[in-house]
Image 1 (tube, rainbow, N blue to C red):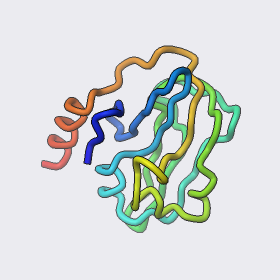
Image 2 (cartoon, one colour):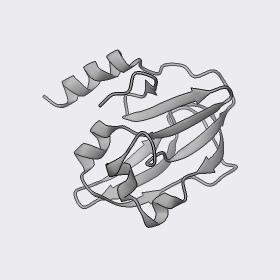
Image 3 (cartoon, rainbow, N blue to C red):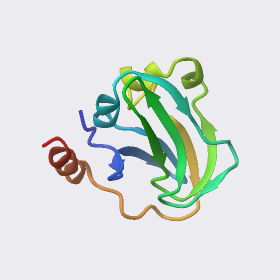
Length: 126
């Protein structure tokens, strides 16, 4: 459940880089740990963030968790469908459950390869 064409943050966000744009969501592991999502708070289009800034949050029946910016840049779009259907993140975190896109202000640094992220998940689940 770790797609090989994405990059990952240790805080369990995934990143798909296409040119100057990064599409971001939370990983299958993260949504599994949280359980059924009941609310997703997304950033405002036009807001700028640095790597590691709190950019949004998700809430489930079990817990609330922050989402951190895995890349630096300006929010270009948000997945408005999640406002009414946060369960899309549980159902398909890498496709219809995407959260937002960021126009990059710098080259991404410090992201993990799928193999490196797999090691993080293995360590977290023990």
